[in-house]
Length: 541
Image (tube, rainbow, N blue to C red; front, side):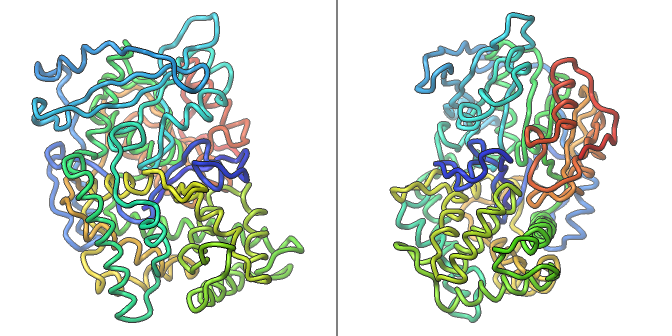
C-alpha cells in the first residue's frame, strides 16, 4: 500500500525525490500493509484469508507498552553520545547512532542509523528536539528535513526546536535495503499490472518473484528486522541520545503509523505528537489496499470535476461527469496496454502511465501538470510528461538510477502484515470488489496487492489497535479527500488512541500541515509551541 506525502508548494518541480517535489519524500506504498511484532500483541489471532476475521482479531489485539525501565542489555545503546559533524547541507549536523539489529538478541549485531539536526535558531527557551518523518515507508527523513522541514517549517517552530530526522533502518542513509539495479527496475516498473491472460499473469508473478529474490539476496539479515515496531524502538534510542526526556514528533502518512507505534510502546515518553494523514493499524492488508483504492477514486473524481472546467482537459468538456471522465481515462490506459506511447527514450506503458496519474492525485497543485501530460500523450502520442510523473513517484533520477524507496517500502510492508493475497487466483477473485471501489485504478491496484505473496521473509506483524494509554494528548490530522490515507483512517486512529484529538481538514490532497490552510497551521503550531491541543473534532478548510 502506498502512502506517500506530497506538498502543495513547488508541486511541479522535478527533483531527485519525485517528479512532484514531495518536500523530500512523502508517503509511499502501492500494495502491502502495515505493522507490529506478534510478541508485542495481546489476544492476537492469525489474520487468515478472511478480511472479516482479521479485522475482528485486530479489535481484540492491542499494542502493549514496553516496561519503563531500560533492559541492561540495551543500556549501552541508550547511553550513546552522538559525535556530530558538519553535513554536506549547510546549517545541518550529522551523526551515526547504533541500534541493535534484533531487540530480542541485542548481542547479535548493530544497525547504524543516520541522524541529522539543525539547531534551534531562536534566542528564547529551547523546547527540545522535534523529530520529523515524511512517510513511505521508505521515505528519507533526512532528505525531508534538509530539503524542506528544517528550512520550511514555520519560523517560530524552528526557533524553539532542534529540527531532527533519522532515516529508519533499511532506508536511505541507515543501511538501505537494496534489491534491483537501474535497468532491472526499469523492467520491473514497466510490467503489465492488468494481466489479460495466463501468460501475462505469469509475467507479473515472475516480476514479483524477481523483485523479492533480489531483496533477499542483497539484504538477507536486515530484511528480517525492518519492521515498524523496530523502527519505533530505534526512535527511543535516538531520543535518549539527544538528551530529551520525551519525544516530540511530526509524522506524515506512514509516519503517523510509526509515531502511533512509538506512543503505544512508550506512552510515558510521548511528548507532543502530530500524526498528519493518519493510518489505521487495525486493518489487514487487503482491507487497507481496498480502502486506499477507494481513496484514489475519491481524489480522481475531484480531479475530474476540476479538469473539465478547463479548456485544455483531454478527458472531457464542461459538464462531462466524473464517471465519463474515468471511462475516457480507462480507455486511454487500455490503448497504451496494446500500444505504448513514445517518450524519446523508454516507452510509456499502461503501468507507467497509471503510476503517473496516481502520483498527481497526491496534490491538487499537480493537476495542471497532469492535464498537460495527458494532452500530450492522448493527442500527440508523446508520453514524456506522464513518464516524468511516474519517474518521480519511483524516485528514478535522470541517469536511470533509483533510490531505495521502493525496496524499503516493500521490505517494511511485507514484514508488518501478512500479504493481502496469497495467490493470483485470490487477486483475480477480488477484482470486482476493487473495481467497484475504483473503476479507474481498481484492477491495477488489486494486482499490485499481490506483491508480498512472494516475499522471502514471513510477516512478523498482525493488524491491531494502538491505544497508548497514559500518553499526553496526541493530535491526529485527517483530510477529507485524501487519496492515500482516507479520512476514515484518521477517524479510526483517533478512536483508538486514548488521548487523541482529531483535527480535520476539509479539502483535497495528501496531509494538511504546511499545505496552505492557515487554520490547520495555526492549530498545530499552538500545540507544538505551547502544548495546547485542539478541541477534539475541530474542523478547518
